Image 1: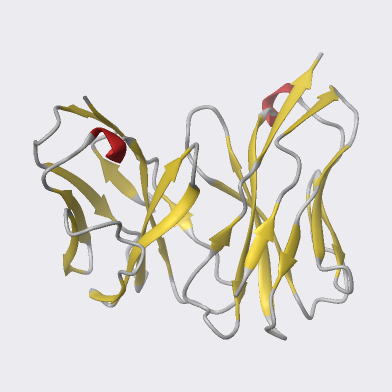
Image 2 (image 1 turned 120 degrees about the vertical axis):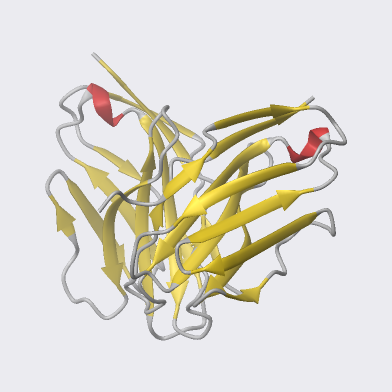
Length: 115
Length: 115
């Protein structure tokens, strides 16, 4: 069975600082994809970044980067230079190669950025 | 493209009433997913369609829930009769395919409150 674990229910960070949101996963698939989504208070789900299990380099998208450690089965999201608008829920998700249809989500981490 | 369109954004109804949620996926996307989000259970996959055909409805909580996709551009999720425990945010999402790198595009969600 596939599982995503986000152990931080909430995180605080000061504006302009970097923050790491943790995500660990469990799968027996050799090929899989890892995703991060942002859900601001307005409620929509916004795709942030993707990492493939065979990608040799960590994914980056602007201020977002993914610290992928395959042996540890972790895919932490790093947000650099935090902004007030980064305050939101963040969800880690995974799609495996055996049962690719389903995107499985973690429970999320609520990030609050303060001035 | 306009993205995934859901309606209504908010629905307030009384216990026992029928509720119909609507979704228009992104044109050309072959897969459509219905998710439910609650504080207690997070994001749960209810059902998904491939080329308008329901593939897996194992996440549908009970017979009161039904979903249809009569054509490639429209899907409904119906709850009859509704109960207070059905109160949640219901998301529709679509994707081109289900490769491991295929991300989901979400609608804005429907906030359902059953009184």
